[in-house]
Length: 327
Image 1 (cartoon, rainbow, N blue to C red):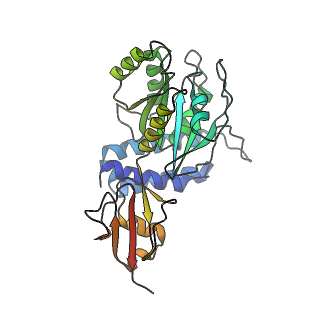
Image 2 (image 1 turned 90 degrees about the horizontal axis):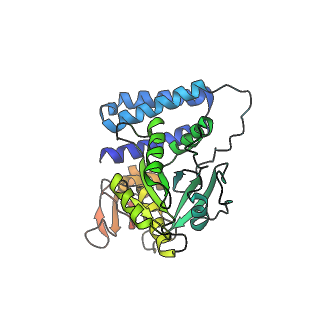
Image 3 (image 1 turned 90 degrees about the vertical axis):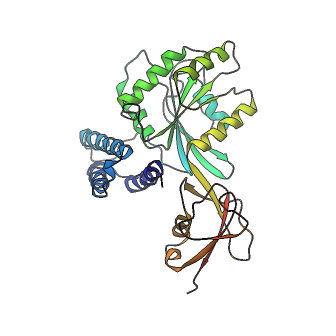
């Protein structure tokens, strides 16, 4: 298992452990997670060093937050849902809300003036049996220092599986890119060019004049994956949906009972690098101890109904049949 896959599994468990926690409970849980990483000697791995620094930053922010008797309303707090979460992150008026309305089940207010979106909005993108939660954050104003709002936006970004910078191809490319990268670096989401997050760029308004030249300019200053789109072109939106799915680093695995047909409408969604043992645990905790073998049909199998063990590496769209000892 690669270090990136190890980290993804660990981040999944972190999100599960700290969900809905706040105050002293959150601080205590975060400190235990840091101690766990050190005890397992994962802190010797570069990516986990970054993860520790991110957790320490969350601890310091939690300690600095004023303690209140009741829970305060937070316009940026959105419960995690679906099979993955992606945050849209960009300057004001670059087309995030219009994009959100085009690919999800939401109807976010849009307009040709700054700060149309003033609170966070969540919508669901359904793509090939996967539900992806898309978060539309208020746009940054790069000429105005609104640090309270900026910190809130970046805190939400930390709870996401991927962060997509939205860059308007009709505007100054260098200015947008440099500002957004500085925000990410100031928030320690990127440190010395390294990160524990998945990043990409959505380049909007690709149907306007001079955007081809600006797309080339953007491609020359970044190594991040870029998806150029036009709201008017359905094909470009389909390309974007595929990119968003790929950014999550997940696979869909379908299960079947012996002698029955697989349910191809309801996959189990797992991180890339998952094995048969992960499927067994997800179906029932007793299945690992009772496991005999699995039959695999799909991309990871050499032939249909290949018999494999618990350590078999799964691939997207595999069909898995578990054979276990009967009680």
